[in-house]
Amino acid sequence: SFELTQPPSVSVSPGQTATITCSGDALANQYAYWYHQKPGRAPVLVIYKDSERPSGIPERFSGSSSGTTVTLTISGVQAEDEADYYCQSADISNTWVFGGGTKLTVL
Amino acid sequence: QVHLVQSGAELKKPGASVKVSCKTSGYTFNDYYIHWVRQAPGHGLVWMGWINPKYGGTVYAPKFQGRVTMTRDTSITTVYMHLSGLRSDDTAVYFCARSYGSNEFDYWGQGTLVTVSS
Image (cartoon, rainbow over all chains, first blue to last red; front, side):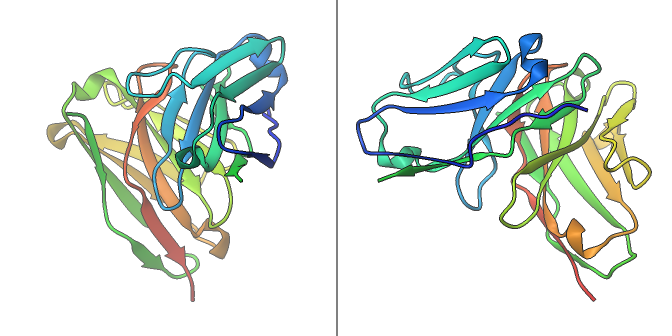
C-alpha cells in the first residue's frame, strides 16, 4: 500500500488564504480527492480529480497538483471553513488511502 | 435524491462480531461501488474496502483482510459490512460511501458507532 502525508494543522485568519498540502509517490500518477469533515458529521467532497469542484462547493475552494504533491487552497477563508481536511487517492488496483488529515483553524 | 442510510449504533464485547448495513436509494444500485471507511475517536479516516454490487466482487485493505466481509442484497439495494474478532481498538464510527468506479466518494452514509467494550 502507499501513504499520503498531510500537515497536522493549519491556522489562518478570516479572509486570508489557507493552503493544505498532501504528498505521496502515488500522486505522480493518480488523481487526488479532498474532503472536509466537521465534528460528528460525515466527510464532504470538496475537490475531485486534483482540481475539479463539485456542484455546491464554493469557488473559494480550489485544488492543484505538481509531481507528488497536491494542494488544496481556500481563498478568503470563512469561519465556516474550520474543519478537518483529508486528501485521498487510489492505486491502479482500486485500493484507496486517506491522508492523516489536517485540522484547519480559523483564528 | 441519493441516500445512504446506515443501521444504528452497536455495543459489542471483545471477540464478538458486528454487521453494519447501508441501505441505498435514489440511484441505480449496480452502477456504483460501495466503500467502507472507519474513524476511531479523535483519529483520521481509514479505508476498509469496497464491494461491487453488480457482481459482488470485493477488495479489502490489508489491515482488515481475514476479519472483514462485505456483502450485498440486490433485492433491497443494501450493502453489509461484517467485522469479526472485535477488539477495543475497533471502536469507531463506520461509514459507507459510494463511488463510480475508481472515482470520488460522492455520497456518504451518516455513520454507525460501534463500541467494543467488556
